[in-house]
Length: 194
Image 1 (cartoon, rainbow, N blue to C red):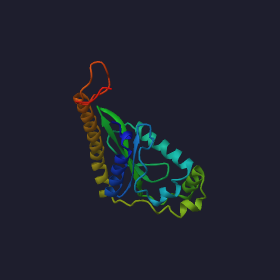
Image 2: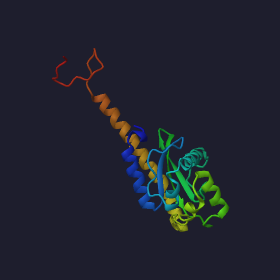
Image 3: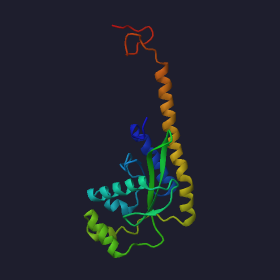
Image 4: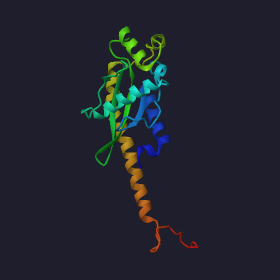
């Protein structure tokens, strides 16, 4: 099983993370491609989410998260100005995906008008569309931010355990299924071969 094999389950986990932490959450593969929709998006992200150039910029940012050498999650400023953090989902000692959380208001906010203009230009929106929503980010105090960073790896571990358990169960089922010596098809016990 790959996370991508169970998109509804992955979305349920992203939704739960977004609600529990009060932030945006998305699960991606290691290339930064989203496996889920962004759960619990802040209004500022929502203002740009449907713009193709904005999506491309977010994919690029998520791809950078995969290349970041730090294994432990930490808050980083994104191209949109708000904070995001990520943790890996591991299977067989290999990272297979990421949980990215964000939309968090940094200490200095709102961003300078020049940055908002650059973002609006990048995503193809009038600056007013962003300025109207720039204050709609998730406000977490320092304690809440630390809590998210402490618990985020546990969310990644949970997904890792679910994927591993599913693989083990599938392997057990494959080994317990009777096979015909002359065929690769499964024949139910007492079943007709015709």
